[in-house]
Image (cartoon, rainbow, N blue to C red; front, side, top):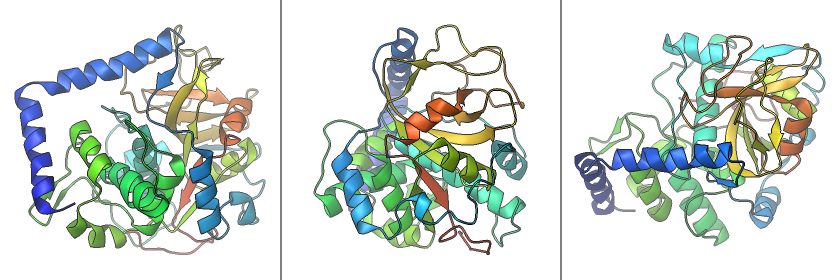
Length: 341
């Protein structure tokens, strides 16, 4: 994508503000919430495409966590691990969930996972990094759909959305950018669904690709069970959960902070950011990208707004759909320093 195309994006963003398209985006997101409340199919932006997952497996050495997890196997059993407090500590602010405006949930799941991973590396592993800003989800969205799906796999999807594996391949092969200005030409300081959608059609600007490549995610691995997910979270590796698993939200979270599964699908990606395997009801904390107010009810472990607990068996079912990805900056998850930024 050349500069002239991207300047059109900037113009679209300004036009959107002028005519209050933000309200339309809010209505579109509200439609997701209404569909969830009514227990209808929720099309939030995850694409179920087993062929593309097979491409990922074909093109990556040790694509499955089970091939590289011997050092962490079983370490999360009976444990509690909460990842979002690291992000709150590094930013010195209460966590606020993402608010997606289009069907770009996968990029939000991956962007939040990168943010959590960065904070954990700095605070828990004393990695020689510094916190600058959140990951720019628009870059992940455009890069996954165009640089990976279209250009590498000759795959173009109608409408919004993508698989988890193309996002994983992009953050590993191309890297990420942050919510800040670049080259005095582009500014990702604030999320824009309009920018995400245009990048999702045209790709990452060519001049920005070298900057992305400075900041790769070192290892992305497919997680296929609750036990694998539990061990990842306990060791500080966030997971972008991509599946069709829906949840009942009509009555909000139950007394334990959980949402029960629904038989109606959510084509969605969310971030697994905590586990509690010590409680009588084992499960994981899932952070959604629908803002802070879409779900109400009791909480546990001072969990963030816009989040809920899901039973271990439900998370296991989500992982077994084959497109959920753990992120780490360390190949094979070794204990060593790795400079991300």
